[in-house]
Length: 113
Length: 119
Image 1 (cartoon, rainbow over the protein chains, first blue to last red):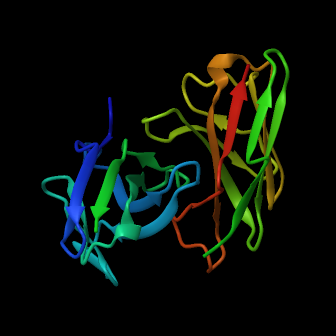
Image 2: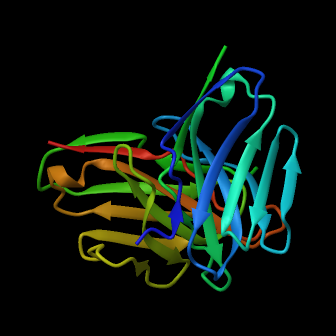
Image 3: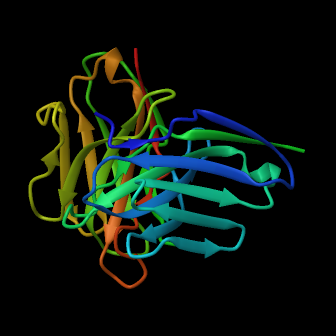
C-alpha cells in the first residue's frame, strides 16, 4: 500500500507559468514532508520541506503548501523555467522513524520555452 | 548543502560476481546512512538503514545476506551486492543524515547514484 502518492506521472507547463505538483499521503503519523528534484542518472537534490506545524513554506520560486486535514501537499513553482524540467519526488517522514523517508513515484515536469 | 559521494558511478559485472559500492559524506558526519534502489520509472525504494557501528536494518523483502551493508565510520558506508544476477541491475543511491547543524533534521543528502548492470 502506497503511503505517499503522486498521481500525476507527468506535467507539462509553459515557461513563465506556474507549475503545481501534487502529493497525497495516507499515514497520519507523518510530520515532515520534503520535495526532491531529480535529473536522470543523478541522485535526488533536496528542494524544500515543511513541518506539519506549518501550512506553507516559501523559498524563492518554490512554495510548498500543506493541508493536513486533506493529507495533501503541493509544490508550486513560479515562474517556471526550462531548467526546472526534472522528476520531482514528494517524500514524508514520521516522528521517531530515524529519518526514514517514504517517497512517492515522482512527477516528471517538462517546462517548455 | 552537504556533499555525499558515491563510487563507482557505474559498474558492469558478470552474473555471480560481487560488487561493492561506497558512499561517503564529504563535509559532515553521517550518523545514519540509507541505501535506496530505483528501477526505471519507479520510486526510490528504501533497502536498508545503517547506523555507524551497528548492524543495518533491512526493509521487508530485502535479503540481508545478498546486500551486505557496512557502516564502519561516520563518513563511509558500503553496500556489497553479492552473487549479483541480472535482476539486481538497478540504480543504487545512498543518502546520509547527520546531526550537525549543517544537516537539518530529516534532511537527507543524496549521493549521485551508482548504475549497476549485471550481464
